[in-house]
Length: 270
Image 1 (cartoon, one colour):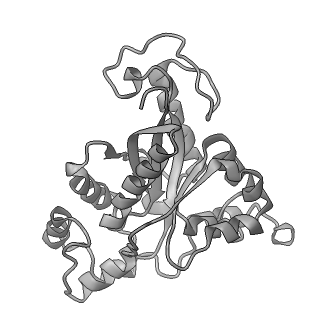
Image 2 (cartoon, helix red, strand yellow):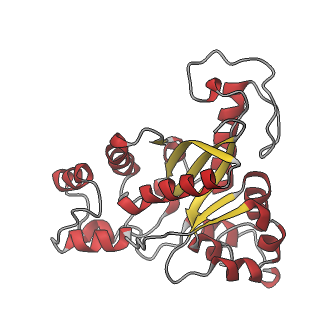
């Protein structure tokens, strides 16, 4: 791995609950990036969304953070970060990326632009992964390839945010059944322009575990063993988290980005 660019993968989402598929995304992405011969994936970060995202059935971040911590007990390189979920309001994905990148810069005493690796001004003193590296790692957003399709949804994303995410950070997209990421890229001038910074990762064993279907099975009293870690199942059962009542939470509400962006975006210009 000598002379490779250190890389951190950040995944943002509901993780409601975290499933084996969520964790597989990191493993698949790491293998793919290592095979390019250019990168060394040194850390994975899971950032559960804030409660005020207002997605139907979204249980408290307190539970989602704890379940993710339990699921990652056996991982030696992926961790959960509560910063996004602890904010007073929903935080746009690009701002989450900025936060984590600024944390990297602070730990390295760097001043630089994302996507460009310079040597630190001075060696950091903290005993951390970041300070043990000679260069600041690049930070990329890890997602399912279906996220590329959501870029086309009016008011869900700001175009300038999509541009910043792809141009300054980059995307690592893992394939999902029923989605054609190459088509999404062809249909978007912006994605086509920055396709060199979008890594498409092929899922070589189909793994379409859905958190929505997991919650549905739990409400019916069906087994979800081997779909989510045993420690997560035990936590769910102990706290009786996923019920008919919890699934109705935020029912009828617009997602926070749709509420927020629709007030500042002229639909006629979309």
